[in-house]
Image (cartoon, rainbow, N blue to C red; front, side, top):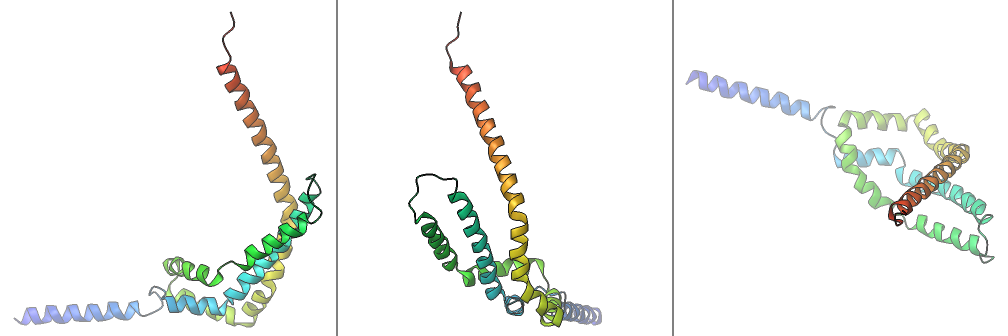
Length: 178
């Protein structure tokens, strides 16, 4: 009987220690933790600013593409820009952040979130958040020519591959000559 009581007591102590550890920094991040992180990051505002920076680049790309497409109405660029503006404005930022919560919870502990919130609440973290939209926009401007060249090269290569496949198929389907 004494051993049974000691065993139960030992189990209770181990369970208490385990529970205490779970409520610490290694505990999984809760939805409230992730929401607190999103708030410290100004995620909603940052998402909108980032989308607006992307939109500027999209407008620039449309402007360049309009130069190469014949027979478009004079207001084609304005109409396309308006469509892109409406698409970006309709992005459900809150729903997107809500959908991301489980992903953050999967990868971050409460301690991780606490450290991130502390960083983004610090002067350096706040400065980074303020500068991030400009960094994103300028980075996109810097890489746009590289992306366009790579995509152009890839399009040419794919077009050649498709042409080769068509020729191959034409040879296979052509009647055999004696």
